[in-house]
Image: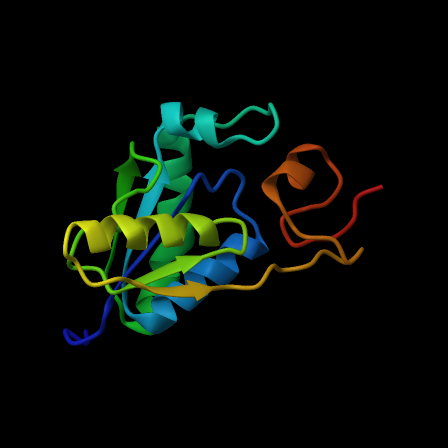
Length: 158
């Protein structure tokens, strides 16, 4: 394992996991050792732009761990998954140098860096990963999957 690799943070609810999330995970592991913040049940409820069910934390944790384990091994990286209870997550810890985000969560990266500056901590490099599109040209999202519009790979369901 490369001990000199940067420490990378990313976070989310990840329910259900889809190819857009996989793009985030891949970018994070390509950059360094990864800490994934997984939203607590309470925080996951606050993040929902629309009302839809979110599976319990323990279920999401098991699924996320299974998803990233082989990717971490492929890149020769270490990882940990931590419960997020703060909307700005764990990224204000000085040990992190990179934050991987989606276009929707990029504004949170700015807020995290503002908080880091106020605490006299170097800002994070914000690495924005483009959306992954479904076969219909729209964004792959957990909401679309839950609604039955697409599957986790963006295949349109009829």
